[in-house]
Image 1 (spheres, rainbow, N blue to C red):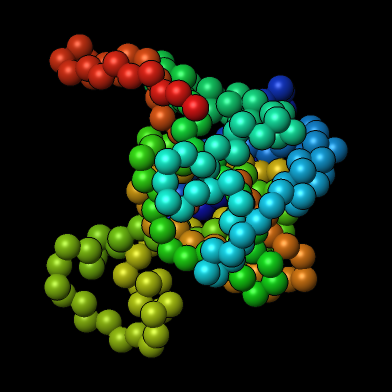
Image 2 (image 1 turned 180 degrees about the horizontal axis):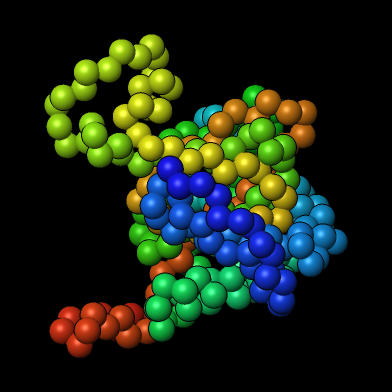
Length: 233
Ligand SMILES: [Fe+2]
C-alpha cells in the first residue's frame, strides 16, 4: 500500500485536499469542515432527526424501500440541499481529474446509522459508475475498510499461508485500506471494491450518507462506441 500523500489543504471554494492512491487506486477526498464547520454540525442534526429502521446489523434511513420501486432518494430531502450541492461540486472536481466531460448525477442516496456496537456488512455498490461516503458523525476508531484481492493469491489455488480466523484470512488474501470516520469528510471510490464498516466501539452514533453516481448525456468511447443516456433522479 502506498503511503499518504501529504494532505496539503488547497483551500478554495471546493474544500478539497484531494486525492491519494489507495491500493494503487485513486480515492478522492474532500473535507467540508475545513471551511464550514458550522455546516457539518447542522447537517448532522438534520441527519440525526431522520426516521430510521432496522437493517440487521445497524440502522438504515427509513426512506429506503427494500421491495424496490424507488426509495433511496435522500437527495430529494430539502433540508439536505446544501450537502448534495456541495457533493455535486466535489464530483465535478473528480470528473475534471478523471478527464470525464459528463456531469455525474446522484442516482441513489441513503443514510446509515451505527449505534454503539453496530456495524455494516461487507458489500459492493450496484448500478452506478462512482460511489461515495459522507461521514457525518462518529469516532475515528470506527472505520470503513476496503478489501482488494492480493495478486499473490487471487486467481490461483496456491495459498501456503497459516492464519487464524476470518479477519486474518481477509487481511492476508486482500490488500486493505481503513478510512477513519471524520465528520464532514466526503470520499469517492470505485463501487466494485468490497468494503464494510467496523463495529462502532464508542458511545456516540456513527452516521454516514452513501451515494451512487452515474454519468449523464453522451458517453463516448473514442467515437467508436457510444451510449446516450439521461440519468434522472
Ligand atoms: Fe458502501
